[in-house]
Image (cartoon, rainbow, N blue to C red; front, side, top):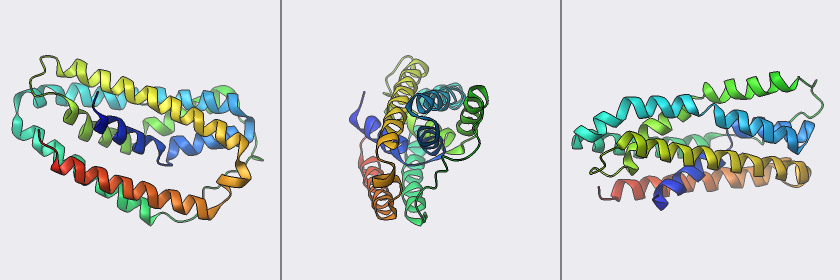
Length: 203
């Protein structure tokens, strides 16, 4: 398991997106246990994205060195795009703990649906999983599945931490536009550095 994969995955997971916002909202409106349930739903929703990447790219990766390089530089472009999009975001996250409470089943399904329909996840798996598979691998699909499993585990853990912090630090962190702006700049810089490192990495 390469440090590049772990770092890239961590940055993508930590970056505030649909799953993070849903988990934070659940924690702030209904408590930590509710945020854990939401985090689990968002994690399960990763499965179709990972399966599509594994089934569609494993054979191509194994057969073509050119395809490997094309996908690698597609990943560089995507990292730069994420950095730019992060810088363009405005305003702090808005969480409304006073909204009407939905049932557990409905909340779980909404969280699953939001993450399952998130196009960033599909692009991430398509662009990045193959780059961390050895060209000499005899079972690239299994190796990609292992990476996807690690990504899912990290997703659940990070989202659970978000939920725990949201329940404790609402006013100090989530309500501060200054802190959220600092986080956006930090994430954008991290994406840029990872893109450079990926572009310069040898196969």
